[in-house]
Image 1 (cartoon, each protein chain N blue to C red):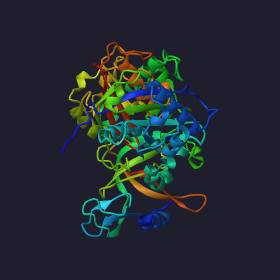
Image 2 (spheres, each protein chain N blue to C red):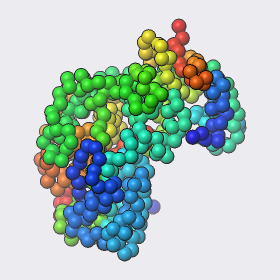
Image 3 (tube, rainbow over the protein chains, first blue to last red):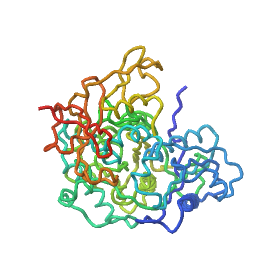
Image 4 (cartoon, each protein chain N blue to C red):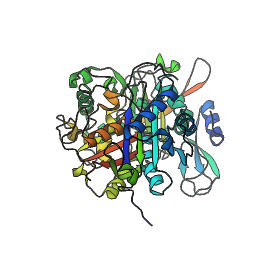
Length: 386
Length: 127
């Protein structure tokens, strides 16, 4: 029996707190509770009515913390989706499935971090999915995400002639959007030359190919259709959702094709469920831990053929007004790194027509997640037309 | 943190040679070592010595790291090498190498004595 999740759930609430560099005055748990509360209030749902929580996959806050703080009497579902930056979008698929099964009416997806707990290298080394990297590759000189992911970028450049200036186009477009986004951390405009003159971090990746690291929180509420129609904000409908795991998911080194991510497997499933094509997408929020990951996803998601990501992004194509507006909020490159939950929040705003950098008339949007060495997740959302 | 299945690999590496894990039933080579053969799901293994020779598949030159042991070595290069045996191995390029070998170039694994007496595997280009 095949069931579709198309229009079986809606995003009814979305919120993010102010992002900041350094450490927050609040704890990670407090920030997630505050963002979760704000998402519920945005929807007009009493926090005690939430009956499902998909907690952040690093275990920094548990579903039980929300039961305790929100006075939830009967939590009917709790889970974690351990896919790193692919988790929030993959959690949309899970939330919709749980709602379609009749288990829950309101599922909360919170994220947040307070900026404490060491740098990204230290945090990554503790993730279960990195245990193979920690045992076999960290002793041999590859410690952090840019060092691991740059091997994929190098291979793409070798096979397809992709240029560093193509990566620059992506960073420049994200910064262009962030410059007019009030809740963005990096707002000073950037040029291609700025990118080319930024120092190498892990050649071929430069400093301005990397996302930022910050404190903050964001959350969305996913609700059942009958509940969604009666809430205070127009629902944003889920049309399609899927997750995909790359070949050799635990080791990039052994992956047969270094340039193919899990998103390549998820994309066709998500579009088939949604019943629309790539050309119907008005705006995309793509996970952007590094510029190259955006370029590779554009190919793996089917917006262009494999190897054509470089030509696709040239000439400001990803800016609002370009051929495919990507990350009008500035993304993790320039707005904030919130494990991609801010990408979902932005998509909700785009499809409500209330975004800071609104894509005029946006009806269909695609949001992607990427994480844990190559896992991918895709959700296709649409504006309410009732 | 060392997994049980990988002990022979780690012990061999520390002693200055590369051991690769093969399925004890179907013979398929795999790396890194793991508990089950992805081809036939056998848990039996045998170990075979590798010459450590192969071709560069990808290369990353690290200019920034927060890891103390490697910070003073920057910039250094980490190679993804397609070993002739059929699996890939990630290891540093010789820290004294004058140039980063291009993708496709032939390299071979060497073991360089460290100041603490241990051996560090690294690749050198094959002239």
